[in-house]
Length: 404
Image (cartoon, rainbow, N blue to C red; front, side, top):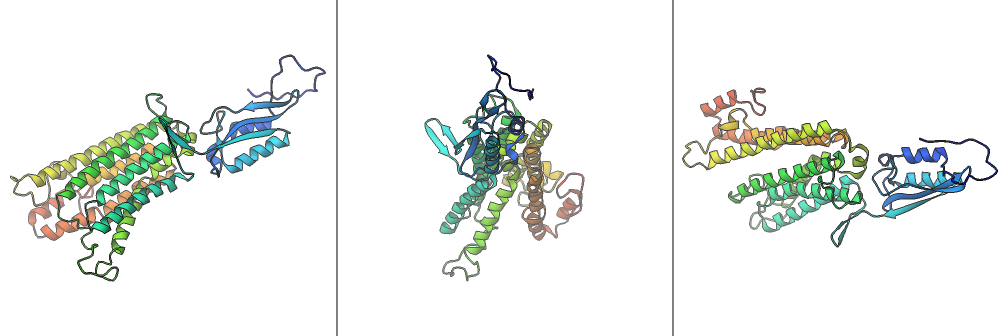
């Protein structure tokens, strides 16, 4: 309880006085939240001690507490604007504020890993952009199509892991193990990072294994320079077309990871980490369902195509889940990213819904379904059985949208 004593000063100080802060300053310390402050300029700003005059004791020190993620609850990190406000308010009452500056770092054993002072989105963009730049350089130098999918999916994994470690460094903890605490503050970052890691590892290994056994990647076939072809002005416009492809791939990863990146933001975890338990559970169930659909669909199609005793292995797959959807693997992919968005709520801002919308649009109208539909139509457009398969099998969602 906050007590504001308004009385004339006694002639003698009491033997056991109680330090009191001016009510405006105390209310400020209890109400200012890190989510409403500016980003620290020179590192994280932690209020270590605020002193202010007391009506009966002169100056009294108020220990804010140990380092944490926010002021509400007793301690926290402030941006430069809040720092100025606290200093100014303390001076108004004749007191002072001691503010410590520290750059975020993560200590693993005897090794200290520093993290740059930048927003979570900028950090994610730096990781994804740098990794795809390396992939582009190797692809262009060796004229290989083998690294595209492996680099693209591993960029997701690297960005999610670095964002998680950055969160751990910002929170002054090298271990955010769920064993230590079952709080949503620790559980949500772990589940989001693990979800991206499992998805990226599974899909990356599957695509890499498939591309190793193929002669070429049809997406990159016209982007490589033929022998003797000049740079830029040749038919392939090498390496401009190839660089645009890699730029789009980097944008795909950065946009898709928006819910995860923002949910692992130290400021957002501080303000909303204890909310949304039901959404986290619902999203986790949806993620498991989507991943299961994608894995089973890929396995069934691979088995269908590799079975030498199957006379239709060079045609369209119509077994298992492929009886109910012409693209069940893409259905699982879409469900995965909508579920990850649900898991990130309400810690991630709602505008991060751009991620599942982007993935759904990309698969449905740009690079996924349209390319495969055009490929099969060019091969089997005159095949009566294929036309019957198209008429009775939905393009994506089972039971709906049966027509093309």
